[in-house]
Image (cartoon, rainbow, N blue to C red; front, side, top):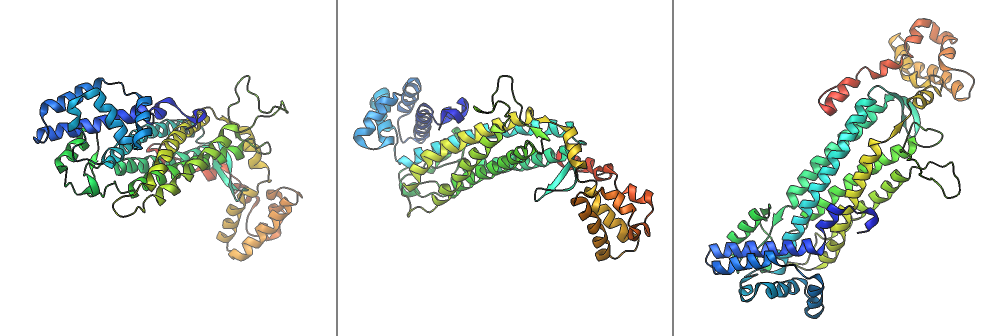
Length: 435
C-alpha cells in the first residue's frame, strides 16, 4: 500500500492491529463453541474472551516472537497466552493455522467489498445526476475515433451508469463467494475439531461455512474476487479514457475541474492537463495486474502449500486499497466535470452535415433507389465535403440523381438533429427506471 493512493478506512482493514483482532475473534468464537460442546471448560472460554478482548496486542512483541519461531500464527498465539494466562492452553484446540489465516482473509475481503460497494454507489449517484443534466445535450458519437452519428452526452453517462451497475452486481456476487469460513483442521477432515465449531464461528463472523476444504479454502473463490476487481478497474479506465479524449485541445467537449491555484505544468503556465484520469488509467492497470497471480494461486499442491500466501499478503491490501482510492477519485471527476455543450455543437457541425449520411441513404432506398446505388451517390457527395469543397446538404440538392427522387424539403428533413434523440427516453427508462 502506498499512502499517496490510500484512504484510511480501507487501509485500516489491512493493518496488523485489525488482522490480529480478527485472529483473536476467530479463536475466541471457536473456544465458545468448544465450551458449549464440552470440549473446553466454559470458564476458560470466558477468560479467553475477557482477557483477550481487553488486550492491546503488541505488534513489536509479536514480530520479535516470529523472528524466533518463524511462524506468524504461533507468534500471535504465544503473545495471546501472555495476556490470557493458563487458560490459553484451550485456544486453537484441533485447529490449524490456515483455519485462522483463511477465515481472517475472507473477513477482510468481505469488509473491503463493503467499502468498494459504497464507492460504486457514490460514483453511480454522480453519473445519474450528470446524465439527467445532459440528457438532451447533443454531441457527436464516434466510431474508430471518427465522427459517426449524433448522440447525447447524457447517453454517454447513462452507458457508464449501466456499466457500473453491472460492476456492483458482480462485486456483490464476489463478496458472497468469498465470505466463507473454514475451521476444519489439518487437511480439512474435521478429525480434531467438530464441524459445529466451524458453523458457530461462521455465524459469529458473518460468513458461511466452506462446504468442503482441504487445509485451505479453495482459491477459485479468491480468483473470482480479484478478477471482479480487475473488471471494475477496466470499466473505470474506459470512462477515464473517454474523458481524456474529450479534454484534448482539438476536442474540448469536457474537462476535469481545474481548481484555483492549480498548476498544470512546471514549464508551461497555460497547461490544463487531464491528470486525474491519466492517474486512473495507471491505477486500473495495477488492479488488473493482481488478477493474474490470484488465478495462479488456484493450483496448489494436494491439500495445501503456501505458494499463495505471499501473493495474497500483497494483492489483498494493494488491490482493494488502490481500487477504493481510484473509484473515489473517479466519482469526484464526474461530480465536478466541466462540460462544454457549445463545443459539442461545434464539433457536430464540423463535417458540414456528413453525420446525417445514413438518413439520406435510407431515404433514397425508400424512394426506390437500389442500396448499392444509393450508397455510391451519398458517398460521392460526402467525399467532396471531406475534401473541403462545401457542405453536404448543398451537394445533395445539386445532384440530379438525388433531386430526381427527393424534393429540397425532403432533403432538409433528413438533417434534423432531433430525429436522432427520439428514443432517449426509452434508453433512460431502461437504465434508470425513469426518464
